[in-house]
Image (cartoon, rainbow, N blue to C red; front, side, top):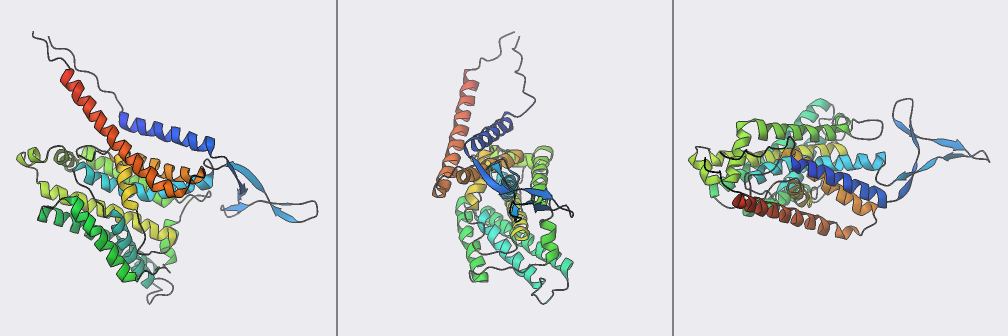
Length: 377
């Protein structure tokens, strides 16, 4: 009689572990980060936060300040949520690529080129442009230009990878330079701004605490859509199949090239969505936008559980990984650590995540090898 199969836990240990790391990291930063003096804010008649003033002994009007934790305060948490949203949205697309067994080093450059093309279009409809009176047309045209450029860049990556049969590391390393070079030539290294107010009002819509809700909601929507696609749809399962065993996937009838092409399109699209939100938040774009984003995006996907050997990863893990990466970056500032160490720390985190994944694979393989077979009946 064979031994009963082990019961599977009703939750994913990977995501649970990431949440635990976030809580521990947050407690550490809050505990050792100290406090900061900030103006006291209260909701005004229009619902927006306003500074609180009092009258001194000599009749002067002075602002009221209060001590707040450097990490656990509304301003810092709002900034953390906004910064995380840009990286997390791109990390969802990068996770698709990594699950399939590929890599995309050009996401930062796609972000920059999409930002520049979108900014040029928005400026055409802005207060200084020739079509200044067409606010909503400008919103639609600029959004389409930004998202379309990013999607086409992702499509170009996928076509070259599948058509030329060249490793994606080489192709995306080359397009990283090409896309950013095009962005620099178009702008001549100058900043592009003066967008329609209607567009910025949409992106900057938020709560009374200053939290921009549109980037946050978009990040959550990207995570939910990515999870549904990967887990519930057959197309998502094919991505896992190719990353796990490409040869077996070919023999089973999966159109490998088509699936690989799709994941680079998704990666480009998510970079375009992040670029569009960045345009609305900052109100300008330069060819240097997104510099170094490829490291943070890939780091977020890997820390979130995506295996660089393919076949493993989740959209939720990408969101949590992006939060961990941004918490580390924020913690470096809050703890007064030299910011020159930021890239070193993030790179070390990526290496540690890969080593832990490798160790987990070895332990799983050893456990499978040592487990006794079924007993004879």
